[in-house]
Amino acid sequence: MLESLLALAGGYALGSIPFAYIVTNLFGLGDIRQVGSGNVGATNVLRTGNKLAAALTLIGDVGKGVVAVLLARQFGEEPAMAAALGAFLGHIFPVWLNFKGGKGVATCLGILAALSWPVALLSFGTWLAAVAIGRISSLAALIAAVVAPIYMAFWGPWFYVAGATILAALVFLTHRDNIRRLLAGQEPRIGQKKA
Image (cartoon, rainbow, N blue to C red; front, side):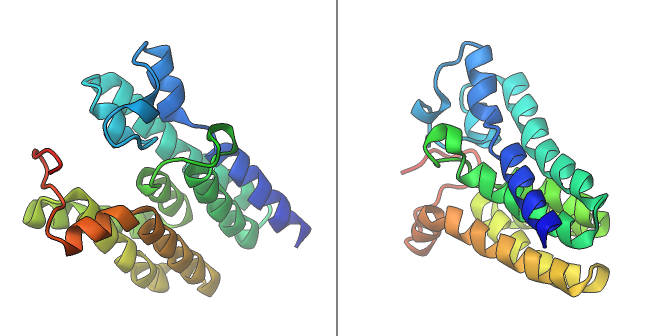
């Protein structure tokens, strides 16, 4: 229990590193919270027009999920899952930015890759397929979040399935505005601007 609590705290510390905020400041792009959607994530960094900054943010956001899980896994599978949840919570509720972070899709992918690479590949493939069909990134992320626990049921222990289910619920939480726009038929497709 102590190891899992420490892993949760360590995961949160890693997850709370706001790469989007750091990278955009280093590149002289200003405060990412004042750009586009205001979201602290790679997609919003791309709206600055700087692809390198967006790529570095994506690598950082995926990487912190991977590192948190791999470090904690040295102490067992349960601490690894605790670190995964901590990293995700750190990303969406970073203490450094008044607990207003990103939506967590990239960090979730990193977490899944470290927990079970087949699940990460299948989830990413589902996201790609959904994007290709619907051309709506947020909808694709929600679909991938729903199927990830199902995939995990074939490749992970039961508490990985439970953890993936919690992560999916948190993805829905961070996408609540997107869900409202989807239900209203107002969510933009890739390449379109918001109405």
